[in-house]
Length: 120
Image (cartoon, rainbow, N blue to C red; front, side, top):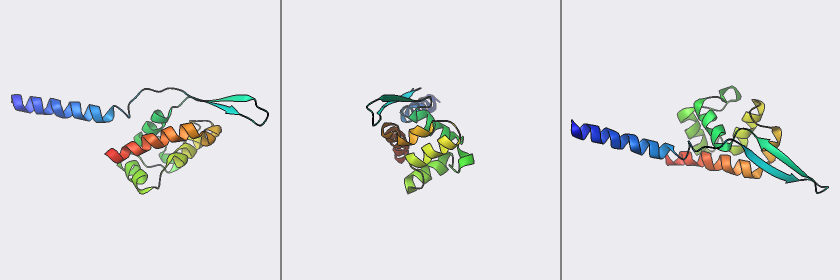
């Protein structure tokens, strides 16, 4: 009985450890853009890259053709879903601003979060 409790506790700790990068806290992504007149414009995305990937994983972008759970993992691994596709779907759902598609830093963060699925 003691071995079972220890083993289940260890398993739970391992699962939490694996999930922790995907559950990291981020609320706002801010990008400063310089236009042709050398004026700075700030693009604020109220939905951070980690939150976007979590929403997709949970099925919030199914209406845009983004699969959830294991389907999302398989789609990322096969190259059918990438950062641009996910952000485009989020734009269509009104979850991020249209300028987000041109924010390389944000796209790189989304891609990094999606690539973490390869560890599954």
